[in-house]
Length: 370
Length: 259
Image 1: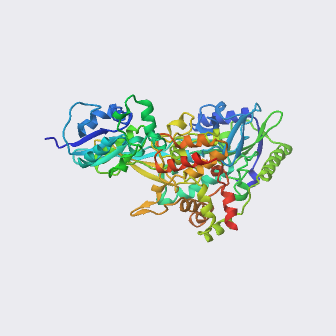
Image 2 (image 1 turned 135 degrees about the vertical axis):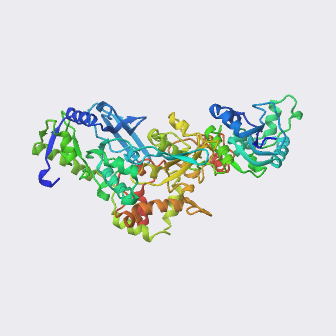
Image 3 (image 1 turned 90 degrees about the vertical axis):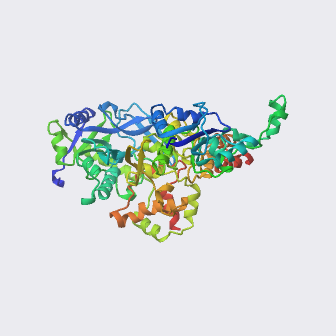
């Protein structure tokens, strides 16, 4: 849509409910943030009421705490341990199976891609992450067919981040906090006597969906309120670095003494890579029935922090934690530019929050500078 | 004579839980019995068929002079020897004796200590004989056990990842209990295989599967210690079912001497 066509609307929670219902009636599986076991998790939901309401977060390095207020808010937290990646590229997937027959074997199809999905409350950083995944998985002849199908039928309802966490740094990676493109609908939540949302339509698909819902155009003052919140959000993020400079520093310092220091703390547990919305490494595993008559090949997420992952004929390429951490950070923040035309980091801060010993990659980058 | 592979299941110092995991296979048990000849498995059958055996599963640790000799005979009689469970792979919970004076205990517990012949330590099977494969866990996971046996029968490498329990939590969608609840959890240094059983039930990992491939126990211990866990609790975190594994043992010793 061209700039001149952008209209903004003031919508209520009830209007969002209508949109939710409209998506359901068009056979979309709604998927959104809910509260489970003390964290914001992304799950398939049948009703709008299941969305996490009134939740606020208090994040630090290696620390995640949720609290709840009776303020009826919907998007006053940032991101939990999961990213929507898990629905486009599931953690485990059966690729195919084979069963022995008299003089050969039959090959059976594996898991099929999901039907139409609608992602709710997706943040700007993660829309950028999906665009990165697109560049990895959608490569013409070599496309990941499963991903391609899941992506094709996707509907995106974005949410602007007005309350960044202490671990967010999307201003540095220039991936937020305001969603800029890549969505069908986008909302910015304004907390007021009666909360409202400034809705923006980002695609024909989005326009078509809301056609039958009566929308009230937003007043300039209301739009300004939302813009002010987003501007304040940018200022709140204190972690700063220059991604292009970081890329250069990392590539030039494979032997920096600081790699030894971070390796002393790094657990090599793989959490950072498994919460990252752009990490895409996987392994395939063969599971054979004890009779040998049936076998299945599964794909599962893997990580450059796992020893098996770099095991080839003759041994491991990266046997030490130091070499694994260096591989991860250098690939993500530097080598990624050569491979996929951008950094692999979108500033969501998940790897900082969910590191069990609180390693902060922005601090590690700064240490490499000296 | 049957051309099926001969399977033997041996017990050393242990609770029998790992052997029970074989019997727990229920649905797959008859399939297993079709594929192999169960030649020696006193927990399941009185029938004993003489060796040599194609594959021996060994449960339990070595705690007596008699057992130290017995394992040598079993090794000689087995083509493939797989130690199963925390006792067989790291000495088990009974390896807590390794940190104490055993003769003092023998004198305190038994009316006639002279009849007790025991070693000062509880040690893993691999400390006594060459082993071909180790399956971790307290107890072992029955699906992993079937995977090891099935792989052996079908000539493939078993799919038993040696990464951290954290990978299982993340793949299953468990919010991290360490980060979200501040619980001490051994998951980041522990070998996967249980399917992250304890975090599934909102508990920190107890480390039943022992150390993962490259555990950084020192970093984890100092982090939980800095965050308020008392030295004694850090010590007990590592001194559990796999207390004699070198990595857990060394880490626990640091908190024994720390003041």
